Image 1: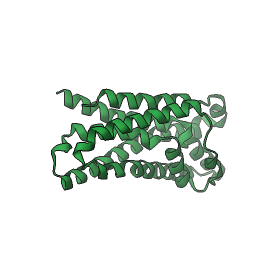
Image 2: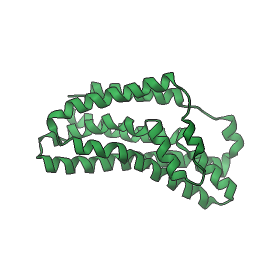
Image 3: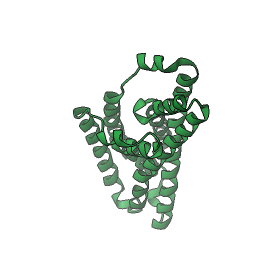
Image 4: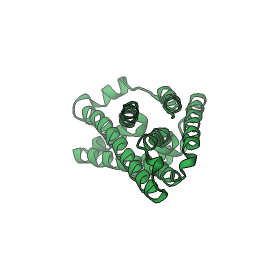
Length: 217
């Protein structure tokens, strides 16, 4: 029963992190609003959201899939989880100290939203946040007792589902905000109520790392 509760909590963490990333303006939903307003077409908003989602999904898979290949080494599982958790905490502490946004993101043209979304997710550690959660899910499913080939296939599938669930939650949250601003609230509302989640982002990375260490078996 305790293992089921832990697994459920980890999956909720996947969804919650996706919702949080979606609400964060730094993940790009204001760019979708901007594209629709510039083109004066609602379809541009949906295309921009799709590009942002695709870039985010690719970034999540780029981080998670290498770990699915490593996880067949069952005897290294605990060390991998601890290392991933420490790495996420270190990233959070770094972002607490260094509040500057990566300058190279400003050099990516607005027409390449997919590339921008991928680079933004990588630069802000969005995919890294999922690693300790993903490793915890793999552990609670009992995959460590499977044969190496089956284990690798199983972990690959889990990584894909984690990336998809996270990206779907992100797109839902960010898309809802973008639609609200575009259809009803307008840019004036956005300029008056702009919220910066950089501090919360850094603290959330630390929290995820600590959560992974606490739930470690």
